Structures are given as C-alpha cells and as structure tokens.
Image (cartoon, rainbow, N blue to C red; front, side, top):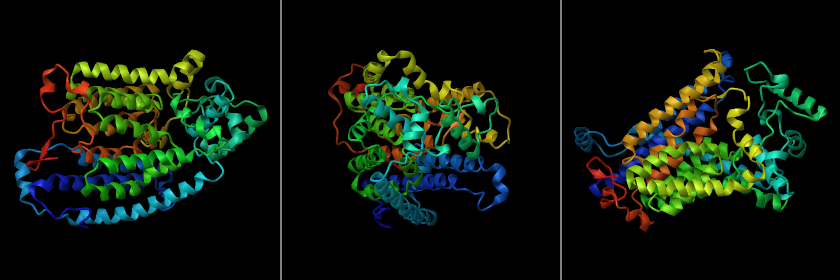
Length: 482
C-alpha cells in the first residue's frame, strides 16, 4: 500500500500525496467505464428492451469521477480543514486500489492476447481499420485510396463479420432509423456480394491521410495485421507517462495503464483513437516547446477528425499561458503540418478526399452510441432530426470552452475531457470516443511538475506582459504546489 500512498505527509510530499488521491478517482472512472461494457441482459433478461440504455449511467458516472480527479483547488477555508484530517488513505480508497489490481490482471491478459494476435492472421474487428489497411495496400499499388476503396473488395480480402461494418440508411436499409440486426446485416452483405455492389455499407476511406500512411510499412512487407501498431501506440503513451512522472507516482502509472480495460479493449479492437490520443498528449505535455507541440497537434489533426475538437482548447491553452502572438504561430504551424500531410491527396482528387473526410457527418449513418442518443435507440425518447443533436453538440462545445477558459491555467489537462464531452450529444456517440480520456489526464497530471524539457526560446521571448511570469503557473492545493 505504501507504494501507492505516501506515508510521509510533510509539506514537500503533500503535492504528490494529492495526485495519488486523484489517481483513485481515475481508477474509479476505469471501473465505471468497464461496467458500461457489461451485457446486463444476460444477468437480468428483463433489461433487454433497454440494453442500449444500460451503459449511459455508468458513462455519466465516469465523467463525474474524472471531474473529481480534475477539479481545481478549493477555498482556503476547506484547505485548512483538510490539512487537519488524517493523511492515510480512507477505506474506500483502499478498496478501489484493491479492485484496480483485479482490473490490472484483466488488462494484462488483454495485452498478452493482443501481442499473440499481432502474430496471427489479420482479424480486423472494425471497418475503419480494415479500410485504412486496404487504403495502404491501394496506395502501394499506385491507386488513390479515396477513389478506389470498395467494401466488397474489403469483404473478400479480410472476411469481416457483418457487424464489423458500418451500414448506411440507403438501399435495403432505407427509411429506417433502428440499427440493423446481425441477421439483417449478414443477409444484405451476402446479397451485395452476389450483386457486385454494396450501397448499404460504408466504402469510403473516412479518415485523414495519416490514418493509413502509418500502416504502409506493414503492407509494404505484406503484413496485413496492423494490430501491433496500435498496441505500440498505447505502450508509447505508457513510456511517456513513466518518463514524465515523479518516481512516487510511477507505481500508479503502471497500475493504471494495465487496469485501463476500456482503453485496452479499444486498442485491441484496432481503433485509431489511441494513436491520435498519443499525439494530443504530447502536444499538451510539450506545450513549453513551440515547434514540437505544434507539430504533434498537426499530426493528430492529420490522423482523425476527433482531434479537430481539440483545436479551440489548444487555442485557449496557448492564449492563456503564452499570449496571442504565440497562439498565431502555433496554429499556423499545426495547420501547415496537417495540410502538408493531406495535400498530395487533395491535389490528386479534391472531391474524393473531401467526400471521404466528411463521410462521418455527410453519409446517412445510423444513430448509435452510449450518449444522449441511447435514449432514442432504446425508445425512451423518439428520434429527433440530426440537426437537433448537432445543435446540442454545439451548445455543449460552447459551455465546455467557457469552462476550460476559467480553469485552463490550473488544469490544462482538462481539455482531454472537455474536447470530447460534446460528442456525448452527437448522432453517433461511440464508446471509443470516451475511453481515451481518463488515462491521458493522469499522464498530464503526473508530469506537470516535471521540467525535463526547457521552455522553447521563442516562447519565452514573447513581448506580452504575461511572459514576464513563469510560463506554467503552478496551482496551490492544501497550501502547497501541485
């Protein structure tokens, strides 16, 4: 227990002790998100009509747990009151730590399974990864992935299960909103394979260019199992966390990295989220270094559209810490990197590139997810027009931006949560959007006092008055810096 909760409660160690307490809330978020993936209909069959609604309360509770780990310093009166409390961990914190060890065993098993699967025949369990892998193959053949991608070719190469595809509300699925059953998906896919066309399934490469450029080395050597790339991305995030964390926090770094079962599930499933998350974490972690931070952000923007949600939060973070001029410099660099990666394909066929990039919002996909939309997919509420969900998403974005502006100086890592919260109200609110939130927050939180990288010279020489003070003001909790 002493490896996870310091026994020394001196003023010098109290800041570390507080982060260890916050790590408990991160573990609570992992547990709640793992529970959101549980099939409760097998335990309680009467819940079957509400099966799509069951994850909702657990995901909301996980957001609360993440916020408890993030919340800024409290009033001075409460600080003095807490200083008089016992410094040893409470019973519930000990129980959560023990439970986290149990989840770490599960995460370790998933890691081993993922490594084994990396050396077996490719089994791509989502069409996003299948389409990206196929795009890398097409590129090596000298063909444009944004024009020549075809779901039927994909089905013949990788033999995906019908529920590993993304159905569209056209053809045999037209004029309906309820998601097709597995039987319906299988029947329509078999029919399309015989007919030679598949309008009911998404065939476009619907991610920016870096999503499949990173897979080219695999296809170059005829290795179509790209799972190892996503596992390595996760392990790279853990290595970064280990490097930036103080020694007293490293046991938590390892434990939480293994216990993060939801993120492991997403990674083993071949989701791209872990890769763009790694880049976003580096952009925030290296925020004192203009070039590296901006380049990491630009690469994230060139890999997946969800990274675009972080742009306004990055603007606020840089503006609040470094000033307006620095914000312009970094945005220009990040936009330049993102554009440079995509530019050859934009020039190759601008219409096809734009159609692919906009497919997630422009193509008639079925409503799906564990957010607000689950109230409609479970028929608690009727389906509203897509514009309603877009409006809710916009309102949520405005509110989170205002909130982030207020706490950015004390909790810059809050962007990892606030940037994806609007997606909770989206037409498609997939669980993988939220699995890559809690652990990155802990990584950024653990590295806040680590000054392994000196501030960039260009950042420190800004002429704004704000640059006359330390670049990253350190907040105070319990009367000491954290």
